[in-house]
Amino acid sequence: MLPPKPSPLNLYTLLHTYLHRLLCFATLVLLQALVFGHIHIAGCAIPMPYVYFLLLLPSDTSRSQYLLWGFTLGFAVDMCGITPGMASASMTLTALLTPYLVRIFSPSDKGDEAYLPSAKTMQWGPFLRCAFCLVLCHTFTFYLIEAFSLHNAWLLLVNTVGTTALTLLLIAAAERVRTR
Amino acid sequence: MQVLLDFIRRYVHIFLFVLLETMSAVMLFRFNNYQGSAWLSGLNTVTVGLGSLHEQTLAYFRLQSVNTRLTADNIRLQHEADSLREALARATHQPAVTERRLMATLSGYRLIPATVVSNSIRRDNNYLVINRGAADGVRSEMGVVASGGVVGIVYLTAPHHALVLPVTNVKSSISCRVRGQHYFGYLQWKSGSSRHAFVDDIPRYAKVKPGACIETSGYSAVFPPGLFVGRVKRVGNSPDGQSYQLDVVLGNDFADLHDVAVIATPYRAEIDTLQTHAAAEALTP
Image (cartoon, rainbow over all chains, first blue to last red; front, top):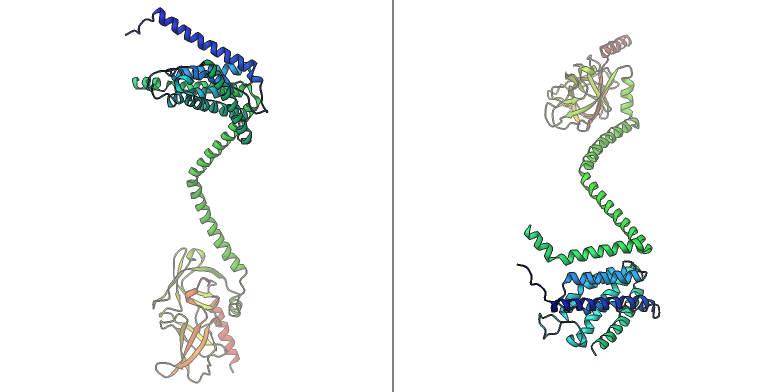
């Protein structure tokens, strides 16, 4: 049995959704490449707010789509920066975990119903916890790949903590603006 | 096939994840010198470790044949060590007075060295088997001696072995005399201890004291005169009371007999005996 033919209204909604995502995607990549990629606070904290993009995807997004979006975003960041392979590898891993984390921190009133993760739908606490887990995973993986050893574990820890805190702050600010 | 397709569909995100991570890794190692060299170095370490493990595993499975070879080598080396030890013992052996005297007595004779391969001392009819036979020149009725004196007489010969009738056989009877005197008797063994035998028919007027040497008399074609047999321990009466019976401690310990020699010179003993008797006759007025 063939799937139902999309109506013009559905097609418009789909197009709008994807255009909106692409816009967010491009904005985050450009911001990272032009602004945040050049910020090194105390030599140990680099903001990486592009992880926020994974939280903009609805909860019913397939796991393969999460992976593809995560890898593409990381690849784009790598191409704009000087870290070929690092962001894409860490973003792919983070994208693999995202659906599980979104499900764990989903609001109780939603059940299995799809929702758009945000501070409004999830409340600030769960949203920030979910964002923290994602950012921590991404940051730790990124710095681990960059160092490629555990000889300087202390520096790895400091970089991870600093970048996670700074990134989480930026994500919270962006979320505040978005949900106002 | 359907199961396989279902499996792939179910875990497609895992396959996709592995694929994307592989692509990221290729980029990482291709375009980052540090990570690339660290990866190669790590890969080398792993390869060497795996190679070593593989080699160790193969070596473990080769242990069976190595063990067999080592066992064979071990046996061969033990035999070699034993024969070398024996050769060394022979080379560094310091002969005792009895042995030196024996060797001096037998200096003109051809001796065939032999080793005792079978020995018995517990029965009445004890026998020895030596590892020399007819192929080596050993014949019946040849005398056999050891470092402690007379051992016995060759009884039967095979190509490579010979049976010896030792002094410690009740059928053995060897003509002996007391050294320095002309009284003679026959050495006989009466079972019991392998260190003791008796010389009968010594006249009562003979002056024999304990400690006197008993030697072969030469009244046979087997042993030349003067070969040490043993020492008198006790002088007693013979069963008929007409003569003395000498209790003799044998020079050889038959329980620990190893190296012997066969007196192989034919008729030499006969000739020596004749010469001895001739000399004795000439001296007698």
